[in-house]
Image (tube, rainbow, N blue to C red; front, side, top):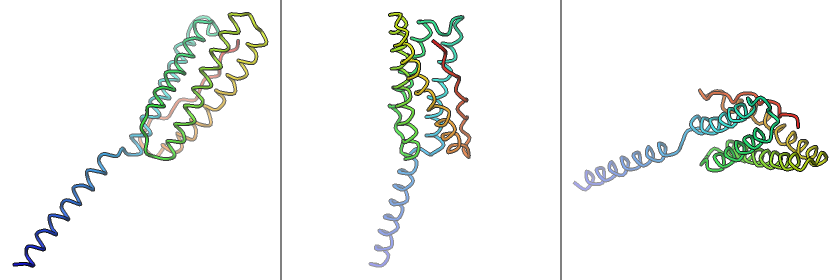
Length: 163
């Protein structure tokens, strides 16, 4: 009788351990899911910049402000992502840095343009080029890492508008 009770308790413990293991596994997001979330935010940013650039004068103050807003929103969304995959966390940090620099440089470009400060505009434009130059290699790395999954690739970035 004692052996049966021990076996029954052990069976309950084993069942509980399996159930907890499945629960923990189902609670953590897969790499595919995390890739998709990161890629969705990056894609929305690209689409937002493309939409802002459809203006007849893509270098207008209004367009530049919209681009800065897109970068700022993408930064906020990217920061809010809860990723557990360490590589994706690294990509996330790099996207946040890039969007922050893009937003800042674009705002500085607007300020310089409004003040008719050619030197300030040139510095801001160079900072914008530096910030956006990070996008293509980052996108390529994300796509390569996430490629085996069914994640949609991030489109290749568009060149920044000239001042």
